[in-house]
Length: 117
Length: 108
Image (cartoon, rainbow over all chains, first blue to last red; front, side, top):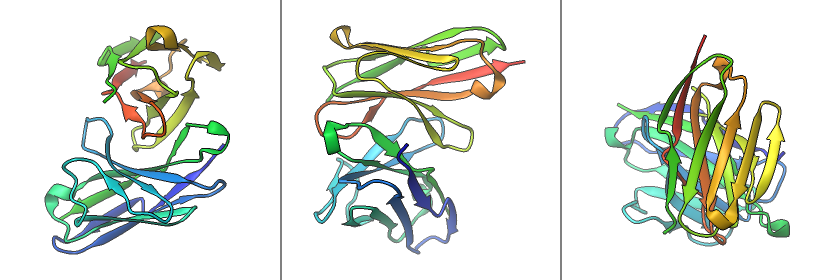
């Protein structure tokens, strides 16, 4: 099956610093990638959708200047949390879709646990 | 937007028991997926099932698209089945929308 990798799996940073999370589709071309965040004991909430080569579309309430998304190629998307604060601590999960053959299945990375101290 | 409701929210089972988890959705969908989130947070893709019935070992799923619901069956549950089960749906080329999940605990 399709594989999505995410790096790093866990990161601890100090308040005010920036953190970059990478998401790669390993064996397919991801025409669309998605970023979700999940707080403890809650469901996944969509943050943004990105298509290769174009600007990301952010969900209401998500600060685009704080969560920078770059989908530079069909296999790589990055999420940069800028000037991180403790309230940004969360579990971030990327997801990818390849619409070849009208396949709407989404594949998920293993997630990145961010702790801001 | 489309709404997804899962029931029950919590479930405790004795090892070996069977269970049925339900997912209702508010509109027609192109895709429905069931996931198991393990204790480390990894989402395990169980089924891609916009309609019909599929089986994989002790797990099976049925989606009745015309009635807007899906069921996930777990038979002969094991402690390793514990975790959160999510149903997620999509309409058109939009992102998956997740339900709130069913938290399953299987006790020995």
